[in-house]
Image 1 (tube, rainbow, N blue to C red):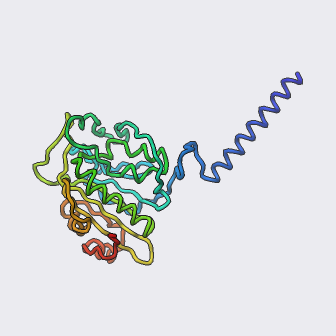
Image 2 (cartoon, rainbow, N blue to C red):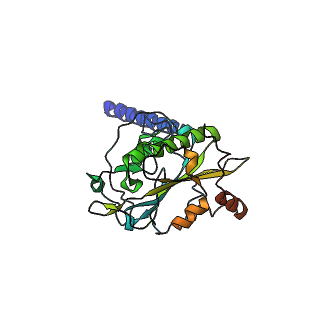
Image 3 (cartoon, rainbow, N blue to C red):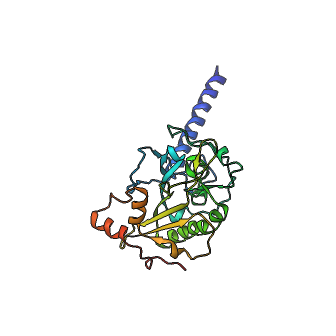
Length: 269
């Protein structure tokens, strides 16, 4: 009898210690992902663009608008913070379908023997701070067919430059996608995944005292041109895509930011 009482008391003590430890871990924002530096990022996503498809999918670390006709996202949007830029090696998982896409995102096998890379829209390199965040970029709703030379070349340079600017200016709001409105676009795979001829990336620096934005429109092919040669206005990308990007901003600020193609406020060193 006494032995049972002792065991019961010990069980209660251990359970209480575990619960107390969990409270401490929670207060420190420590989660089960022991390898992560940051496992959860509070993001308001106040600057989500409009969707031409009315199929907006919100994930933990980015949001997208899925275009079923083209079997890919028309845009992927997320905040990028300086403290997220961790150089942590992570094992690349397999690409899987996005279960949140009601119409089903394209299967990764559409890309097999197609001659095109599975090009991330939200780069895996922007989400190395957490295994969960890293793995989430391998949903097929977050990829688009890209020429390898383009993906590994000028597009990769732009992704690296985005990280550089994040460290330099503070958190940025990033919107990326392929131009799906161009005519006579090629498709790959049984599900006819559209191959964009051009890709865009828009960056919004909404840190005080100066709010600024920059937009890029790049042909999906190899290029040795400097990045500033691809700078365009947000207005132009809106005209091409039919997407309204920063309509939540006050009109005066929105109109000024979206009309300019001036890149002098951004360091291209």
